[in-house]
Image 1 (cartoon, rainbow, N blue to C red):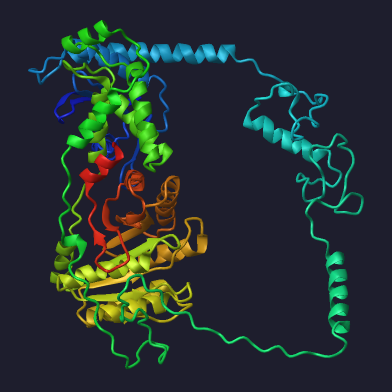
Image 2 (tube, one colour; image 1 turned 180 degrees about the vertical axis):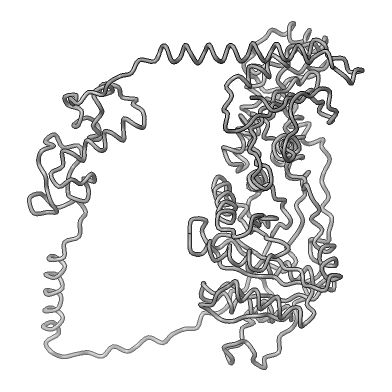
Amino acid sequence: MLEQLLIFTRGGLILWELGNALKGSPIDALIRSCLLEERSADAAFHFDAPGGGAAYTLKWAFDNDLGLVFVAVYQRILHLLYVDDLLAAARREFSQIYDPKRTSYGDFDEIFRQLQKEAEARAEEMRKSKQAGRVPVAPSKKQAPGGAARGSGKQRSSGGGGNGGGSGKDECDGDSGKGRWLANGSSNGQENGINENSRAPNTVVKGKENGAPEIGAFDVNKLQKLRSKGGKKTHTGGGGTKVAKAEPTKTVKKNRVWDDSPSESRLDYTDPANERGEGHAEVVAADQGESMMDKEEVVSSDSELEEDEELENEKPGIKKKGWFSSMLQSISGNAVLEKSDLEPALKALKDRLMTKNVAEEIAEKLCESVAASLEGKKLGSFTRVSSTVQTAMEEALLRILTPKRSIDILRDVHAAKDQGRPYVVVFVGVNGVGKSTNLAKVAYWLLQHNINVMLAACDTFRSGAVEQLRTHARRLQIPIFEKGYEKDPAIVAKEAIQEAKRNNSDVVLVDTAGRMQDNEPLMRALSKLINLNNPDLVLFVGEALVGNDAVDQLTKFNQRLADLSTVPNARLIDGILLTKFDTIDDKVGAALSMVYVSGAPVMFVGCGQSYTDLKKLNVKSIVKTLLK
């Protein structure tokens, strides 16, 4: 049974609704999490009411010409098949009586009830016709001849033995059939020396006893013979006299000088006298000037982008319509956009996004969402389809990359300070992305705003991690809390926060071990650290170099944090820190992929190796680069 059907404008004005009261706010969640995030091309949206009260499925349809949204809500367990048909019929009928000046449509109640009855009747007839036309096929026990010796040796069932494009079920059955004709019951031919392309499936070769050795296999007997021969030569050669060779003197490699005036500055700031780094060597505080976080980046005008568009549109291409007809349509402005009209421009946009390192799945979803927002819309006068699609994509990218909440960390730090507690930031991510280095950059930026910072060395897994963070702390002249290696990082972080309260530190920056998203023990330890200490900000540190892997990393990080959480409201990733941004030129698509997958904003961008090389993400510049 349909719970509710709602019709509202894109501005948020509800025109008509019919149905029961819903638990929670599924419509608000749909707008916030799907429509505004350019996921309108999805088939459905699932909503779970807080407290486990109800589970809803929402489907929607657009009337882009009138700017209307039609949303149907029903219980997820029902699996109603007529909802799409009902939404299309409701859109068709409501568009005929729609008037922008009207705000009440009570006369649509009876029309909708009739449409619902017709849709339910059609769905019931379709269900009965499918049941009547379904003929059960009894599986044959007889094997098709030659099925096991074809191709890679996979055996098909008798119903699909001659079909090369069998389903996944057929292939699975073929694998099990292949395991039946093996004498030892193994389904892996390589482990037992079996060639899958063999024409004699009844022969079984175990190891190398009855067959030729594998190509490229290592022979231990040959190695022992060579060693014995080499040992005899070394003992007999030289006539029993040993000539002592003079050891060559080791030359110390000098530092390379890149210009005529050699620099006398010391690059090694470690102190070998004390293993805890508490030696008496004098270290000069790192003062490299103002951080790039406090500098405004100037974005050039859009004239270059417009010129590029003109040049691309002037390139010769396939003309589907005549010159006179296209000119007449552009003047009249009555051309209604159809999906076939949008496909060429969207395909070019998808290819352009993928060349900018946007994940293929994300680029495809974005193009589908833009197509859904433009289909059925009328073109204005003197307006081309390509420019309309370009403008819609630009608006979509700006909407995605613009943060949905405040990312002013300085304000949040002062708010936590007024509450008498430190502001805790946890840095997480995969191996080798630069967590410790960019943590030091964030610490340097906070120090410039007169904020007391303390570092917590919770990477107790990687060798040298504590020493690396200790070096940064000594250079920045800030305290560091450490317990060494092979300790529980959650307990270390908890004690570090307690120490920060005693020392009146304003911010605690927690460094964690790098871990792959599939590493179960380390992901469990990270979830424990976050659940135990409840940090104010969980920053995911990711490389700007990755493409499709960014989707996998963020999705699995959030999924594992949600699955391993011990509290009802699991803490997920709150923000993103993009590193190595200075090495990618115009391949800035990783920022879009990460934000689209997680919904978390990009809060910092690392663009160099010094402490000042940390800046904010310029959304307009990124969008311009993506569409250039």
